[in-house]
Amino acid sequence: MADSDLWVLYRIAEQYYKEGKTQEEISRAENISRSQVSRMLDRAKTQGIVRIEVSLPNELDDEVLEDFLVQNLNLEEIVLAPSEPGWKQNRIYDSISRSAAYNLPRMLKGSSVIGVGWGETVYRFASVLRSRPGLSGATVVPLMGVSASANPYLQVNAIVDRVADNLHAEPFFTNLAIYREKSVPLTVYEQKRLGDLRDYWNKMDAAVFGLGTIDASCKAFDEEVSDASRERLLGSGAAGEILSQYYYADGSQLTYDESYETNAFPLDSMKKVAKRICLAGGGNKAESILAAARAGYFTVLVTDSQTARRLYELVRGEIMK
Image (cartoon, rainbow, N blue to C red; front, side):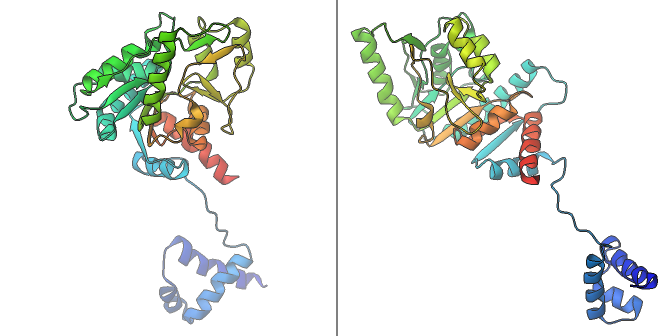
């Protein structure tokens, strides 16, 4: 093709793609038919003058970001708490917990049995939750046993009590330890309380829980398990933890130490709960959140905007491969 012909194709393509002119406008300006313009635009693509690239943007505004993550993570809803680059974890947790305290009473309306987990974000949510009528007749139950640690974030009965009190619901408490050596039998009373708790779990139609990374979880449970069990967890390659149960990037679960029994709502059963609300954020949790979302462990996510943008980067990377 002659250089002059290439120049004509370039001129036509520039008017159409860069200047935004219609084919009709170009045909009048160049004194050629509209069909000729169309053919020349096709030839411009063939000759490499026009290259069309489809790409997701690097940044999205919050509303578009929410819609993108809801669709691509198969969620029912996502709530973005404000956060900025450089914020410390405490400030991020506070922001998430306040957004959760504002939105969860609406989300939980109509629920009859609400399970609640533990962790720093869930604890902070329970602390800032204010009295919100509308759930009288509901029961709030722990999703796991109690911790021997002095860490207030792991006191599940205290968290349950605060949530139930502020939602005008009834609390149910447990006396069972989160981890129990299988060689130590349960007392008759413990067996009854465990049976009562499992009855509630079978009726549960909403669950609120946090999510952790492996290193953070192991630090929190230092007093709960043996050194050997802790080292096994750290070396497992698991992606994250929910209710003291560990999962890999593909959603499969880590088989726990055979010498221990975990008194917690089974993670596999979580997928059957109608409302599954996860409160999690912070820059190092995006990969753990993504793996849990892919596994279907939650349908509603309350996180911070910076973590949401990291999630977007991860999903965008998958799509663009």
